[in-house]
Amino acid sequence: MAKINYVVTDTPSDEDIACVRSGIKEHNTPFLKGLFHQDLACFAKDETGAVVGGLVSEIWGSWLEVKFLWVSSKAKGQGVGSEILKRAEEQAKSLGCHSSLLDTFNFQAKPFYEKHGYKVQMTLYDHPVSTERYYMVKELG
Image (tube, rainbow, N blue to C red; front, side, top):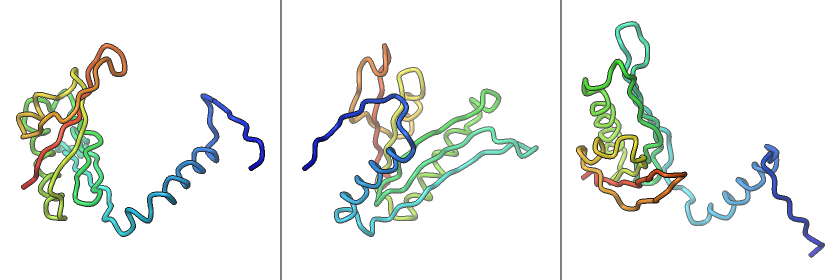
């Protein structure tokens, strides 16, 4: 093998990032080939059509992976977040998911998710700084 040069940068090129992604995808393919994968989202809109809440997630195999759940300040306390989460979980279950995974910070929505049956599986302390990050799961039944 030729001499290797190591480059550490805070401005990686799109090409270099794509190379790493392609390499890991190539490595993973024999293990995950044919695994069901699709995006899943749910939005709440007011009478004008403006989004007042939403959930963005992926279904990966038999897991729902919630990436983001947000409710606008004007819609908080009206059950919007609960309904969005419920509808996404129901759709995921209909597509064969048995569990859901998400993460949240201590200043975000841990009690909300616990109310909906999520349990903390792992806690990262002082992440990124002076906060806690919780990784939570729920069996969808």
